[in-house]
Length: 573
Image (cartoon, rainbow, N blue to C red; front, side):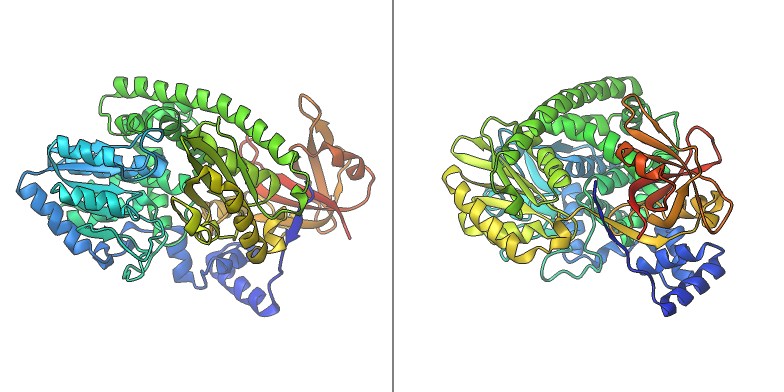
């Protein structure tokens, strides 16, 4: 991979400030600069960043409509009304539903949950879901991770005597649905100071407010934090501010005392007895299994697992969604290969700034995954469409720094429906409108995207000498966890390094390089692994200097030692 390295060294003034901050904290000056890049400029702020506390969570009643939402929920309990907890079929929606349902069930039994069928009902609030609520005597629906655009469906529910409380984090339109309360920090008249909560996070804030209002100890919410961490990692929301607090303590809960359903998923993933569970484990192992239920069958099965109390039953349910995940992987691989062929056959693809492809045979539940794969391969915003009757349904994914929601919004007059946020969105349109959508989507992106955003880039945070790299540095980097958007695992660079003479090609197909390196500033020999970069070995062995970009990791084969996971190698200038 030929990456462009994006690195801006700190100014002398910034360097001095970073050095002073690092000295007070007892960490490497480079890590002082990392803190400043994340908006952390004082020792007090650093202590909060490294050890976020639950008592630093914002007052949930800062949300517009929160008082109304809590009052309506209290009324429902007082009148013994039937309540339905309704949510999207993805990880964020399923964890949100499980969280609110589990918490309310501790105090009230007349509560049910509902996840719409992706194929039959599509995204969000459906008429079928409202009819189910009406038939089962529901008077209040709490909708999570969707609902902000469900104007017609919520009006229909209102005509049937059903009230709605919306807990959503997607971008609203100018007109809001006729719900009793709308908890969404992105609404134009919002009063909540933090706008980046996941859908599950909004549900948590609602339950926090309900607990405060009813004198319920906050400690009763702590067992639900594992669900918050899973949603935050899976929904790719920034890991700073309130999300950092929820993710930090959610990971602690996940590692120390996960719920029965989550524990069953950990068992199936082989994570129960292993190393510390991280955000990466959620992204690559836990999240996909929860998602597979909604993609291949119905997300309600994932919620059923997440709220299960019997460990033996939970394990059986986890095995079932694991089977769905295996089916998903096979189909995903096939669809991605087909999608790649379509893109490769577009004669002028290199001139385009976007990818929009359509195949009416594709599985609706997997088009989002395929769109993600295409953005990773081609570094372009991608929309992948399939067909249901005469309507094309699509999933869109973006590249770093580009708001794909705005690009889709620019085509709203030819869309049937759309929704989402900066990096991910869904849409539907008539099949005959696909060519026009493709043209206008490309035009918008060409006019608004930068060359930098569609290039393979490495964001280098700091330059290190080998004398800086040791176990203490690794331990201090770990204090920056949890990693994610706005707080990525730091990528460093070291310039003018040399092969110690013992680097070699390894791997079943001789595709990786196991490196032993030195620089001119110390006697340290540093171990590294460069996956899939064996083509560079000839240059490495030429005895000339080269530059490396890498993350600092623990050597899993030699506990206590650190090694570099090398992302890119290039000749020194």
